Image (tube, rainbow, N blue to C red; front, side):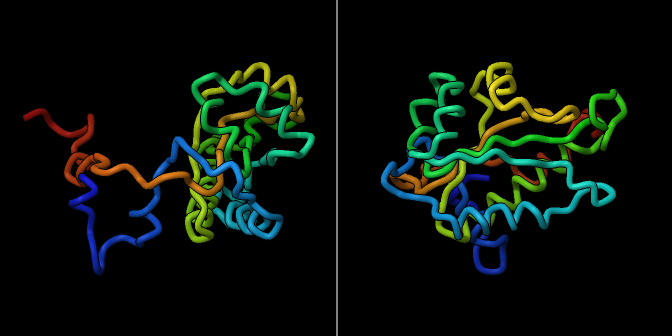
Length: 187
């Protein structure tokens, strides 16, 4: 669905329609403690399999000591824009029970995605933009943060005030395309 074909009126919520992943953030815009708390609260209320809540976040803001610990592991492609975000969030999931191979939750990554989606919508409600990404040195960041046994770094989210306007004409697959996946009979 193209942006000019998006539903209006009784359609999907404006927070969903207006969401986009900026490649530029306003470096002067700060994500304050109250906003950070609301973002984490939104993630906390996400659904999870068996209420396992297998997610965790390492947050850093420009000017704070932990920020450089994260920034130094960004790939050049994401370093061009992510360093200007008011908040960088490293997302982690608990896949295994402590140091064993026993699954903590086979749905851990899915559940983490739910928590990030909640955080993303809360960001929109606060007038913040978010950009989820994986362009960083996974091995280096994992060594840097040294998560507890059973936990794994999955992705990052940059949050802050977008610099510039949303892109025009964003393409979205149609609802019909969503329903005609690999399980559908060939025509």
